[in-house]
Image (cartoon, rainbow, N blue to C red; front, side, top):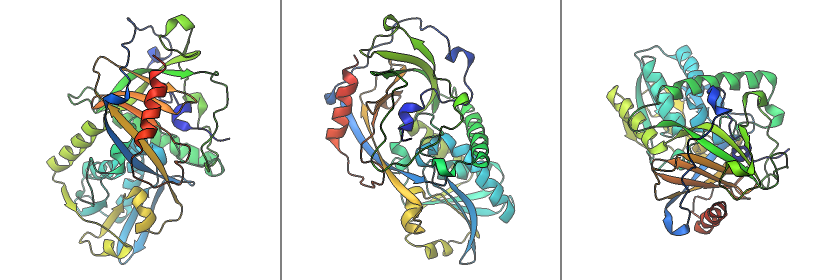
Length: 371
């Protein structure tokens, strides 16, 4: 079975408020103003996919304790905190609180790992070639998708799935602590899952993609089905759901500010080979380089998966998401703009970082047709 997880996992929260399954909006949703002349930015990032799931393990290398923590596919932001807690357990086995450790990488995994280690009492120096917004995590969609390209069916054993559930729940709990802050790093939004051919119709997979497992479908409510007169969209089928959305620029800025406030140091440095890690003064190094580990560690288990997002001029009055199943389009009401994610047929195995404006314009037009 091949499926596009971002489209198929609508409403995939592990813990949803009771109102998510049955509620009525007090008014008709404001129409999204969708047109190509409203595009203000296009960003491309690479998802670091591993068929076995994230690599979270220790290695002795050049007299250093290396803790590898990368390979989260399209689930980086969603799983970050729970995954960082797994990495922390390994760190505790090699170092004591109060010791200075190094974290390499400034994406979602690097930032949350650094903060998790700080909160556990470690002094942290963060090394990175680039910092937000010039990291792959900055181009992420920002929707809670803890099972997006996280593992293949052949590697999703019952034990692996139990670990995944634990990480997802732990991460979900930490995300809740960021609700209600002035910058809005994490917010709940209602949304609509739309389809032309019904929700049971198969969604063709992308070229070259492996089979992905259905991870705990009983924990993924699909929302409330809507009749034709209960939604304003030009789509034959609609469901309403509630989901977490990450306002990624605000989230990154807050994590960096908290990291600096608690004594963290950020050093700009590029790492080209494993021996470069040995030159760091810290005895323990956490490798959170994401797709960069393909070249840094010569890790052939990593597959790059290209992702492109476009931002339209912000519409504060739009407070709902749209997922157009089978049309490869997702729209999220983020504070930095109306974000349009468009999956491409040849994204899997593709590390091309050049923006394709025609691709985003086509997605915008497909979305505009809904209104």
